[in-house]
Length: 489
Image (cartoon, rainbow, N blue to C red; front, side, top):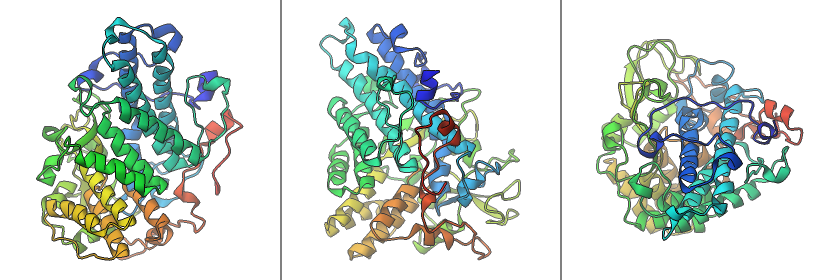
C-alpha cells in the first residue's frame, strides 16, 4: 500500500504489445528491487521493463498528442468521451478528469519502473560488465527515461512530487517540488545520460536512449526553461554530431517502411501484434471505423498551410488525408462539415490499424534544427537562425523566409514549427515559450479560433491562464493529503 501511495497509483494500465528488438524480451519491472536484481541479466531485464512500461501506456501512444496538439490551435480533439477527452478540447477539464488522472498515474508508474533500476544497479557487480561501460550505460538510459517523464510532468502540471528512489527515503506522501527543482533534476539526469551513452544505441537496438537523444532533450528542456544559451549548445551538438541528417522527402519520414530513418533520434518501437493499442485507428481515416477520430486538423491549421503556400508539396500530403467522415463531428461541434472531406492525420499510414507496425516518433532532427533557429534568434544570431529555418523550408519546397527582424523571424520560426511538426506533441509547449517571449497571447489566440463556417469557437480560456496547466488529479489528492491543487481548480 505504501508504494501505491508513493506513486499515487490505484492501478497500472498496461496492454500487451509485440515490440521489436530488445522489447521482445520478457520484462521484470514489476518485481521489487530486493527480490529480483542480482545479476547483469536482471539489470538488463529491469531496464527493458522500464522501456516497455512506457511503450504500453496510453500517454506516449496517443493521450499526449491530445494534450498538446489537440489542446492547441493545431487540431480538434474530436473525442467521443464527453467527460474526459472533449474537455481537453474545450478547456473545461477538472480535477476528476479521467484522462488527466490516467496520464499522471502512467508517468509516475514509468518513473517507478526506472527508479527500481536506478536503486538496484549501482550496488551490482558482475563479470559480464568487466572491461565494459555497460553498467554506466544502463544507469544513463534509465536516467534519460526518468528525465523524459518528468519533462512532461513539469510542463503539463507545473510543480509536482519529485521522486528519485523507489521508497522516496520513507516519504510516502510527498509534497510537490517546485518547477525549478524538477527542471534541475531533469538537467542532472540528462547530463549524466549525455556523459555515459554512445551516439549509437546499445547493441544496435533501436528505441534505446542515446547520447543524441539526451542532447535533444537537453535542448528542449533548456528552451522550455528560457535558457537559450544552453539550449543552443545541445541543439548544435545534435546537429553537428554527424549521426543524423534530414530525410530528403518529407513523406519518407512516415510509414512502417521508413522507421528509424536518418532523421530519427528516438522512436518507440512497434512490430505489430493482434492488439498493440496503437496505429491508424487512433488518428487516421479508416473506412471501416464508425467512431470519432482524435486530433483532426483544425480549420486554422489548414489556413496556416494555405497562407504559407504549402498545400501542394509532400509535407501537406503526408500530414493530411482528406476524407469524408463516417460519423458526425464531435468536439468542437460542427467545426468541420462532416458530410464533406475533412483533414484526418496521415503520419501513420498503416492500414493494419490495431496491428500497426508504425513507430511513435519522440525526437527527430527537424525539431532540433528549428529549435536551434529559435535559440539563435533569441540570442541575436539572426543570420544563423535564417539559415537553419531555410533548411526546413527548402525541404518543404518553400522559398526562403523574408523575415529579417527578431520579432518577424520568431513568428516565422513558430509558424514553421507548427507546419513541420503537426501532431508530434510540440505545439502546446511551443506556444508557452512564444507567450513567455512576448510573441503571442495564448488566451487571445485560442479564444479567437473559428470553425469552417467562420463561427468563433467558444473555448473560454480564462484570462487568469490557469488552464495552461492541468489540475492535480483529485483521486491522488485524496490518497495524499500533502498534494496541493493548481490555482483555478
